[in-house]
Length: 270
Image: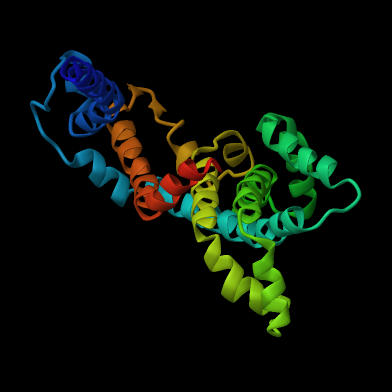
């Protein structure tokens, strides 16, 4: 009786896996082809294998600088987000104050708002302050969306930690900074991993703010990838190679926090 169910489940998982991997495989496949081959034939494997598309990205400053710029402002965003969200989430988790529920809801409404809503205020503000086309501009703009998400995730993990741990630490003579950094933070490292992962993913793939607030010095890879049209048409091969390389940082982050993400789903915090 269980064997047909097992077979159906196996078939479903195989079909799902194929549909999930197919777009990625096809992008990698295209990255090793020439534009002429991409436009003229349909093949599961490159007929004229070439590394030229990757060579162009690694040797052309306009391409590889985009990855460097993206990594810089994503790293800044993650560090500042966690530095702000950790104490904020602790306050929401451990204390009750006037308007706490309203403030928490307001934070989440910022996360629900489309980036385009904040585009004009950020543009005018950064132009006035001279922050346009800087890594800090994009990182700080992304805080509007990453901080509420991180606070929401971390607050859930912190609420699962018994308050008795806080009280016992104070009785033992721990100061709050010492207690928070040496005892409390290690207990919620899974939540920190999950929050860092989602902050990274949002900041890494966000296009509108990153493209509008930068032009040359801090232009991210997502903006560079939208400018592959030339007089000869779309450079599909280079775009496929750039897309393949764009997946790599996200895959690395997922590899390091995969256990934390699984734990977050198991605890119902994600």
